[in-house]
Image 1 (cartoon, rainbow over the protein chains, first blue to last red):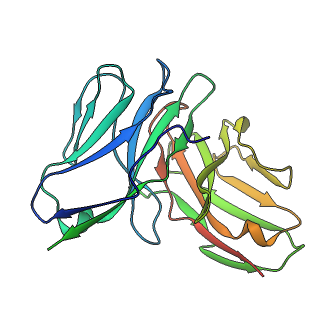
Image 2: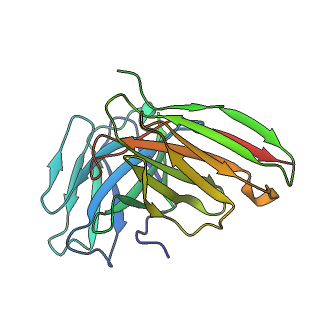
Length: 111
Length: 112
């Protein structure tokens, strides 16, 4: 039972912003929202995470809806190196540190 | 600081055999989690260890087992291999139990 849903694929032009959506309607109050990305033949790479407030780091921004049932990962200027599968994940902490991966969004960046 | 390392990177086995995969976490990290990634099922949680104790287990048969040593290194074992066990097995480590996870490159297991 998937805890997050994402579009299968998205495209973006190079140097333009990208908004990757994620729905997580069954999120509970203690679940963290994480985003990872995975390049071919590599393990997932941490991008950003948050609980309730919007978050920014050098890689991306995370916008979390007020009801926390959805979030959006924002890449401010897509580069060719950003082409990857992006996973929206709920980290359930009430029983440990279990990650529930969605099916991911394959991002294509067009030069 | 070195990242999470997994050995071997590639492995080919036949049905019925068993296999042991190894994971060395980032220095200072005490928690290790294992995941199976397949094209059909995506990334699925196998188990999580912290201070040599299994804290969580995913919905996998008993053929899948693991352990963690006092130096935080972890191994996972799959017995009586089936064709469907062919997958990328990923290990992730965290400093403490509820920190962000850092993934290794994975071990690609092919069962013939």
